[in-house]
Image (cartoon, rainbow, N blue to C red; front, side, top):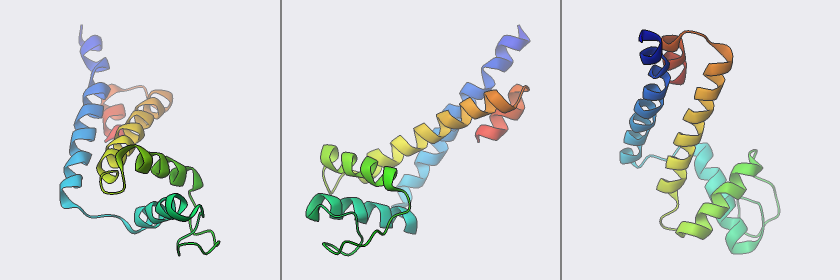
Length: 117
């Protein structure tokens, strides 16, 4: 019985971690690297160029996959509303990835929960 209870601890850690991370959305603070990536995605939409300075064809992003993910969120939610859904997506995806990694690396449920958080 206690093993069943302990096996749910990492799941609770995922829920708690996502909720905790989402609180940071209320600050409306954008990290510098995210701003660069989002501006590159915006320029891809506006000019068809993966660059920071408008139509200038100089690569500005080190995370090209994330530029395209941001581009898709721009298309779906619009220029004014894409940031919050993208950050929620990031938080959920990163936390689930942490859960999978914790199952690969750790045995103890409490260690997994700490790893996830």
